[in-house]
Each structure stands twice: as C-alpha cells, then as structure tokens.
Length: 298
Image (cartoon, rainbow, N blue to C red):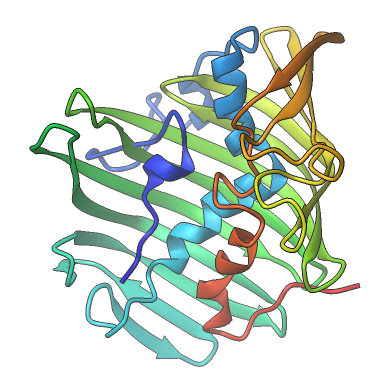
C-alpha cells in the first residue's frame, strides 16, 4: 500500500498525536487558534500557496483518503453497503503503520459523494538523514463534498508532524481548512480550477484565499499550473500569485507575485496539486472511484 505523507502535502506541515481538534476554545471557530500569516515573508508565501490554491486545497482533502484503498483490505478494514464504503482503523497495516478512527464514503449521485473523516489517523516512522527515526502521526476530521456539477466543499481540521530529517526531530502542529471550489475537466488532460476559503496552521498562521481560473494540464507543464491566479490575504496584506506554466514552464515551479500591488518578481516552489503535479488531481479521485464517482466534463 502507498499512502500520502502530510509532510509532502504541507511544506510547513500538519501534525499530530493529539486528536485533531484545532479549536482551543472548546467549540468555537477553529481558525481563532491561528495568528495571521506573515505574507511579507516569501517562505511563508510559498508554503501557503502550496495549500491555498483550489487544486492544492482539493488534493489536501482527498488524496489522503485515496490512500485508504490498500492492497488486501485488511487495514484499514473495508466494509461496503449500498452506495457507502467505510474504512476503519484500530489495526496495523503491512508496512507497520498503525491506523485509528474511520472514514466513510457515501455516494449521493452518479458523479457526487461525501467523504467523512472521523478521527482518521495513521502513526508511522520516518528515517532520519544520519540514522534513527522520528515517529509521526497524521489525523483528519471533517468532510469533503463533491457535487454533480464538479463543485466541492471542504470543512476539515487535523494535526500532523513537521519532520526535520537532518536534525531527526519532529514538531507537532494543527490545521484547519474551509473551502468552496470547482473543477471542470475541459479535456482528458486539462482541468480548470476556481474557489475561495480559509486555510491555517499553527506553524504559519492563517490566510483568506481565492483562486481564479487556474489551469492544470497533464500533457503540458507538469511542474506548475499553466495560467490563472491565486490571491491570499492576511493581516492587512494581499499577495497575488500568477501562474505562467504555459509560457514559462520551469522545473523549479516558478510563478510571479505581487505584495500589496507591488511587483515582487519570481518565486520558486509553487506547485499545483501540493507538489504532485497536475496528474495528482486524477490520483486524488481514487477513493471516490471505488464508488464510480467522476468529475464533470463540459
């Protein structure tokens, strides 16, 4: 079985070991736990852009669930009823990773469905550069809803471990995401993404974000989006990321950006699909394909 590591999903990442509740106030808005992100720091801008665009938000929410479809169905265990598949932890898989909680996938239409994460988590170990290991735990709660028209809604919290392999240390953190977006498959390779919402982590803070007409192309630039833009706002600052893979496709995943309307040149490392390339959007649907769900093509 191949599973998604959240350390790949978040450059700053999300982590773990404590139950996935980002709300320190006991029932209020989970985003109250996060300070505004510092959008004057290019490092923070890259990390947020790799989570805050429409395809990246979607991948964060769905791709982890896709990893539940293991080879033999023994861990997490899989049970199926009409229009519903449940994955349950409380077991150790063939890689030695320990799963807890559950996830339920409900089919609501021919091309629509809901994934519900209920304390779904996995504990594993990551090798350090100089030997030794760091234990990591990743945990999700919340829902992902995909509609017949290709729109999607994300309402999730979670936790994870940010691993420094060189120092052989791990740092626990939490995250929350609320997002409303759309994906329209314009051809077998090309998808158009748009959406808006909020994303925050205890390590980097929170941003308001919106994406307009971000194009990913499996047959085009694999290292960055073809065109479109993502806007992020926090603490009175506004950053606009402009994707240019159609005219300037770089292995370093470069984009241009502005801060409060002022040109800031290029940034490296801003990818589509949280670092997995455009094809990750198709891979991210693997769990939903168990129930025959498909994206809408116009």
